[in-house]
Image 1 (cartoon, rainbow, N blue to C red):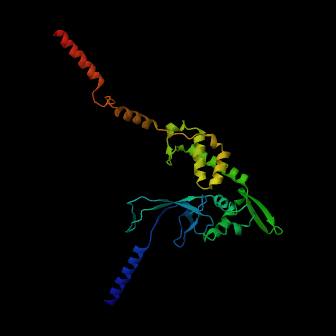
Image 2 (cartoon, helix red, strand yellow):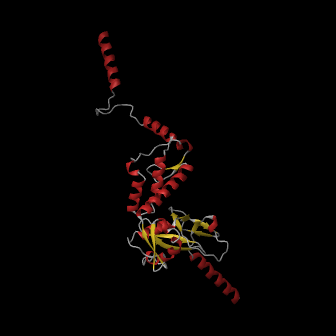
Amino acid sequence: MSSTDDHEETSDTESSRESSFLQRVFYLPKQLIPEKKEACHIVVSLPHPKGGTSALFLRPDGHENYYELVKFAEKMRSWFIGDTVESCGELYIVTTIDSVYFSLFYLQKSDKFRPLEDIFDDPTFAHAHTLKSWCQKRIGCVADTKEISGGSLQVFRLNQEKAVAWLSRRVKRVAAVLRERRLCSTSSADFVRSSKDAVEIDTGEYTQDAFTIVSDYVSESLSLSLKAALGLNDIPEKKPSLHPEEKSSKKKKGDSVKPSEDYTNGNGTPKAPAQKATKTASKKEKKV
């Protein structure tokens, strides 16, 4: 009897632990799904390359590179996970991010040559130093490099021209993908796909959209330099365009809400009926 009670107590304790354990739902690329249960991906806080605010990034088990976590959260949403219900209905989508964006963020903090240890030394973010080995491979894309101490130490400094050139190539690559997939946006953040409208979209709009995407990962000063290099300063902002279906529906709605009578005089008496009444009265006078 006592053994049964102990077993029930143990089960209740394990159940309580499971219910109190926070569960989150992640949408991972196939290559990041752990093959072994022992594998453990870690989620850490790092500065977002745009402005340095704290953001979450995922580092897969056995990898040195990071992936960005994009959170989607809506009210009144839950997840059914196994036999449990997770009241937090958030969804985390794991997406790739280029290490060069982190290099740009930290290189902009100084105009002097510095070794990697100093560049990624950030007391605000405990895991910032782990970016060093990942960023070292491509930091030369946007930085000048020198060897000192007899070639035993490499130091780096931001090269503005190389940075803008790299970002420009990035924008062109993103624009090419948007064009290939027929994705575009107007003034809103929603991208739409339409085979009918694709022929009407010029290259400038794809470039503008690609610039907006890339600018979300660089500082304001670099964004302005990139915009000038792409020649986007001379392109006026366009008003949101409507799809053919929306255009026709808008016209119908506009016609249906037009007033059938003119109430501008304030008396509510239509002009046409008034003229008809006058003619009728004159006919009666002639008969009399």
